[in-house]
Length: 353
Image (cartoon, rainbow, N blue to C red):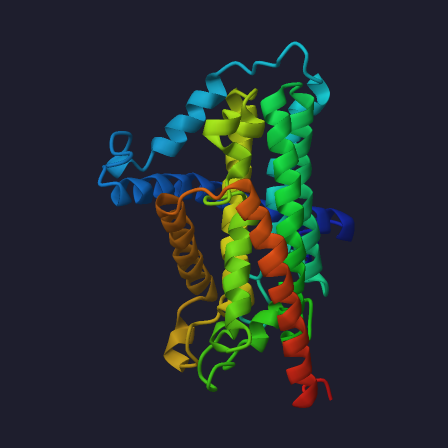
């Protein structure tokens, strides 16, 4: 896109800046629109599983309910507790929302006509970038809990930091397994490494007997990382009122919702990208490639989001000791075992030669 703006007479610096801003908006705006739609989808799925109707008044089939809720919180007053640290109190939701959008910069959405991946930043360490950015999300929660100067948000912030640290350890080892097999930290290279991986015609690492259990752990860990049920100990209503969001109102509260669902969509995208072939069709069959890669990726994201909603609607919340035990005593040893098993297998078969 930069050469196009240069052809209009702009200098390289101005053309690059203009192109980058447009590319960022082409990613950020659809993600924010998708967040509004998946909030609606989440509520409809919960309602269907509880034999209720869900949102059905605002707009056709209630599809505009999320936008009405957004307008409502936008018009409300932002109330700041008198004993809160005002600067940090207002900064915390901004951090959460901003970090949730930053990780999308390295996600490949498809392959262009010239074979180049469709993404904002094609960096060699894209997977490390996603891991680093997603780890920053906990700061918004911790700062919110501390700056509110209220005991329930503070307890929630401590739970959130312990929970996210616990599951990021196992996620790190899981990602090592993927990197070992793909031979790259670049997300587009990881997608291309899944081409014809299963039986020569199935696109995806998930059909690999060694990587399937790793994906199951990643799926569960991604739910814990985003504090979704049954791992929503940070917002346990019966214990912590509304958790770290207790003292928030208006748009500050809405930014947490937007950030949470943006993170959920990101984890659904990572599940699809790392294990299910990303923007590749499910099978190596030429007619399937006539469908744009972005369509395949969206279908896979929707499938994973349904799983997230299904689990939230049906699985009861864990106790805190169960949450920690699963992370440290089950997932950590298992992920370490698969790192050794996969690396040993790859060395024995000459994969690294």
